[in-house]
Length: 220
Image (cartoon, rainbow, N blue to C red):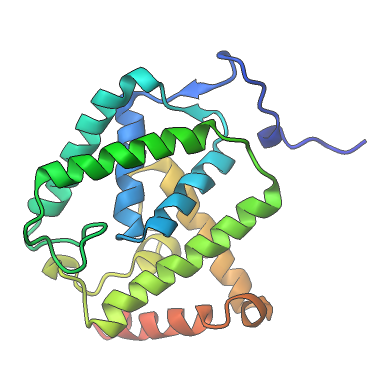
C-alpha cells in the first residue's frame, strides 16, 4: 500500500482548513512583496509555494479590508520610513512620485490573488520542488542585479545585503516561520546544487550567480 502524503489530503471542510487572521495574512502578504523585490513572477511563485506547503491556509473574503489596511501599513513603513528609499514593485528606480495610495492599490490586487491561490488545487510534490527551484533562481537573479550589476541596493543600511546569503545560508530569521522554512529549503537546494551536476543541466548560471554574489558580499 502506498503511504499517503498528509499534505495531499485536503478535504474541503471548515474543521480541516486554517483561516488566517487578518494579522497573519497581512504579514505573509507583506513578506511576499519584500522578498520578491519587485518581481511579480517571483511573488506569485512564493504564494504558490506557501499554498503547496501549507495547504490548510485560507483567507476569509470578509477580512480583506482589514488585511489590506494592515499590509499597506507594513509596506508603507518599510518603504517610506527607511533611511533611504527601497525598491517598490512596478516602479523602476526608487520611489519618486510613489504614494501610499499606490501601495494600497497593489496590496488590494495581490491580496485577492493570494486568496485565490490559497483556494486553488494542491498540486503534487514535483511541482512544489519545481517552484522552489524557480524561487531560488529568481532570488539569486535579484541579488545579483542589485549587488553585482548595480553596485548595491538603494537602502544604504543594507546596501550590500544578499537575501540568499542572509536568510538561506546564514539562517537569519525573517520574522515568519513560513518564510524561515522557505529559506531553509532554499539552503538545502543550494547545497544539493553545489554537490551535483543538476545545476548545469537545469539552471546553468545558478551557482555562478551565487559565487559572484558571495564575492561581492565578502568584500563588504
